[in-house]
Length: 93
Image 1 (cartoon, rainbow, N blue to C red):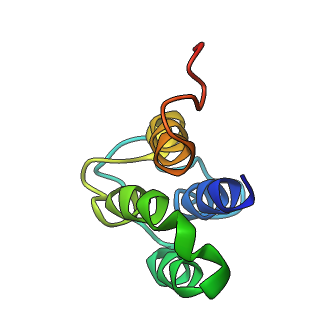
Image 2: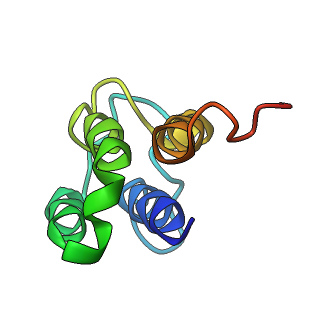
């Protein structure tokens, strides 16, 4: 669960545009805080090797900035949770 939340935190950080400014709410907004390198570094850690499916799912959200924005956070959480823990993750939602 720690890795899932770390990925989500990185994604939310990437969506920020600066102090006192609204986050990226649409796909046309620029990314000023790219966290793709940090995501890749986290995926390379030996302790996270068993979570490779979650990192693979998350990577699209970090690089396809023309598709994903802060409104995509809940979908990202659901996808990486299911990749990490199977269909039982939030199955009653």
